[in-house]
Each structure stands twice: as structure tokens, then as C-alpha cells.
Image (cartoon, rainbow, N blue to C red; front, top):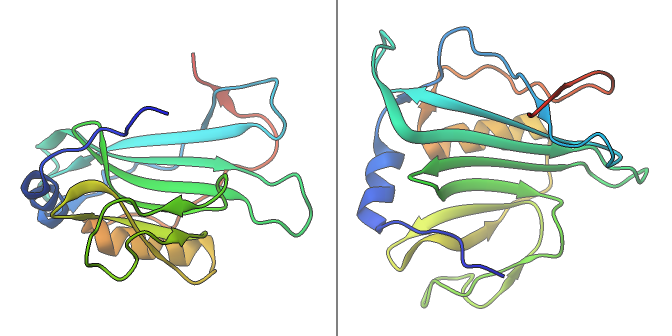
Length: 172
């Protein structure tokens, strides 16, 4: 498997600590990339404003979401909420993905070399802007969304709205 792209820690923290504002009027316009998979996976992506007047936007900073409803009763849906900086995952919350996450970076940190189940929070550390995760307690999607917004320092975002079953736009 290819290694995920990383950026220097200082660049990651500069982006995390910068004031970022959810664009006014932007709602969750989920797109489906597949008509053959069931249930269909959905994604959403938005650029972030850097000022209150929303005249400046970060060119390579995005919030990216992935969602797939579980087809198994009693099993949580899959969701990934990510702050992308220069094509690198910097802050992310993953719930109910495939397998678990093994922390291969973070020597000296509490979760180093541990396998982290879902949900978990990815954070940048000096050794790597991506690859270290901390476990989270199982909770609601709204609480995960709120935690993500706090950790990524994003203001003004609405409550998360998940795709409803039915007609959705296709990514073309």
C-alpha cells in the first residue's frame, strides 16, 4: 500500500492553528461515486475561508468527508472527516473503517505501536504530519463532527447532515 502524503510538522500546525471559517451558505451537498455499490459511498469537499468577510480562501486547505451507510443491522456507518492541507491528511476522525489503525510513528507517545480501533482521531506530531491516532469513545456523528471542528480550528460550520437514502448526485 502506498504511503500517505505528509507535510512538515510546522506547516501542518500552521494550518491547524490558523483561523478557518466555514463558507457562508455552504450546505452538505453529498456526491456518490458509484451506482453499482450498495450501499453507495458518498463524499463531500469544501474549501475554507480565512477571513470573516470570506474574501480569502485557502488554496490547498479542505474539509473532506466520506460516508457509507452500514448494510448490517447494529453496525455503525462508516464516516471519515478530514482536514486536508496540501494533499495531506492533517486532522481526521475515522469511524468504522476497515480493520484498525497501527501507530507506526510517535516514539515515546502513549499510543505508539498500538493498534487503535474505531473511532479514532488522527493528529500531527513532530515526527509526522500523518500516521498517529488516538482512540475515541464511541459516540454520535454530531459529537465527532464537533470534536473535529474544535481540533481543526474551524468556526461557523453547520450541524453535519448525512446523506439520506434516495437520489443523490453522481461525481462525474
